[in-house]
Image (cartoon, rainbow, N blue to C red; front, side, top):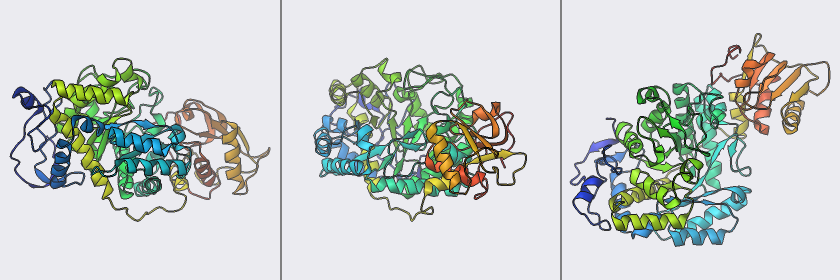
Length: 538
């Protein structure tokens, strides 16, 4: 069993499992435990986490803060406690409505999506309103966004346009990676966000992986772990809660859980050497929140990990995680094809989840949770534990102090410059001579690269270097320079003098490419994944 907490041991008088509470007939509305029960992977319901009998949790809060959070949760009505574990999305531009929603339903917080994220001003106003809705209850709202970079970036205003996380995996300098994500976190915090659903800790298998790919830092578990820990620490430097996702790893399954339920058939021994490595390392480094995927792991059972008690038992008992376990969005196909909104919410809590992301119906979830507590099928002690963890995390985040940034200015450009990967027989720059011809990709891609090259004095025209932009992860091409804009796998089927990967389509990614191709910046990136028929990186 791994170490759960750091600090000196304090003996705890009471440590009761959920199963014992239920078996002894404890009132589902008046729990008597003063500390989280001891977990048991054999319980039909998830048991609570390891007894926090030390003075400090591994990720920061004190035992006294835990005791206060638990007392707060136990003082709530069942309906109030149910609201405290729900985080729905909000997609409108009405601050007053959002304030009422948080206040009336007692929500843990919200995730902003769609029109709610179209401008920095709207997002900031909505986040301020949500905090007003939480005022007076004793803990702030958790205000979240899904801002990974690359293809998953909900905000286009107020934060820099980072390339995909694979650029961070390609960057050799992990201290720069930490600084970049601290800078992004600082921008998010200025808009009122307290949680980012990043970094992605999945280890990708490449083209057979339908949804993660360049969202992952790469295909080497240890290298991915290095990158995840650096990004996680960056967010914490900015006072923003990072979310390590998607436990136990979405990068090695071949079905997209947005559509249906994937099954992970690998043994735990295999997973411990691959998919689980970044999660283990991040937890050891003090991860405060882990997102549970909707993936059935054959070694644990046939239900999604987000609803599987054995998944939570492994996370807590074997990896020693004491933070908040949040589900992936409960409105995804892997859940909705088999479970109703109320049923999914109750099952997730019973399994061991602390925070339920984007339930399909908030009202159905609230009603189902309260009914399950009243019926005794969801012990009140389990609900209190979940709510207490959320309250503890919220209060802890509010006390975080921002660290002075180490990367200033255009941090997206800094990551792009560090991540651009180039391979060539001759690594002496420049890699292009003008005038250049740019083909492939989308018109916007070609225009952005042309503008970036022009800033270095390289213009379009016939007679110089040809550049081919691959339009997808598996598209190949033939030119003097072939550039993979998303994942780099298409380079294996390409013919070129120079192979390059930028891991994104934004202006910063293409500006970084121009910096490297013209010799303004030396190539610094490494290949984050194995590629056949492609030379070693310069």
